[in-house]
Length: 228
Image (cartoon, rainbow, N blue to C red; front, top):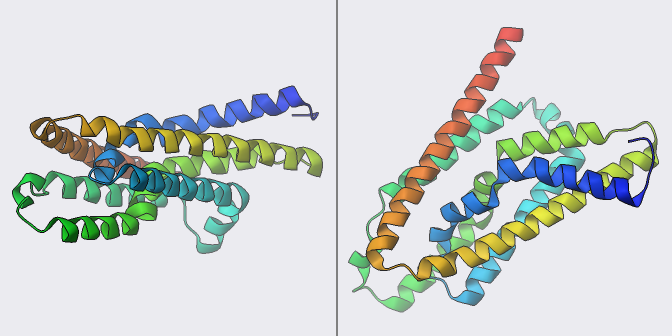
């Protein structure tokens, strides 16, 4: 990008947003996160979805600004981040698959159950729901590539590109919020049997996503070793 204009700004925002969409996959990820928000009041769901979206935006902005420098300091490569994130996501999926049917606990005290659920949800908002489930190794890789692509010898153009990337991240965070806040409402309309089936499918999908990310990381490490 050799000049600064409103049209070029919109174009760069669009390019960044389209690049971020596949690894974040807000619609698909909402089906994974949805079961964790189910059972909360509408206000709590909105609050949780907003917190996750804000965490995701913070992660994206930090990675865009200092991500490459941070990973170089600790000698961490993107494939290693993918392997670690994949293991964590697969573990979360496995826990969903092996969870006891919530209908079996209906005889317990409701207030204690709700309080425990809210406390558990708060502890999961950043990890693992925001990172690495929503913004994981793939998102970090894309952001680092966009950050590198944004570099320009002209400081004005460089800041212009970074601003466009930040705007794209903000739009993505808004999409995440909308998807995550609406999905639990849809899940509430399912009966207990359909919800149980959905939870198991969601857990299996989460497990598969984690394995896939881990495999991508292993392949990335293998490529690095081959090059050396």
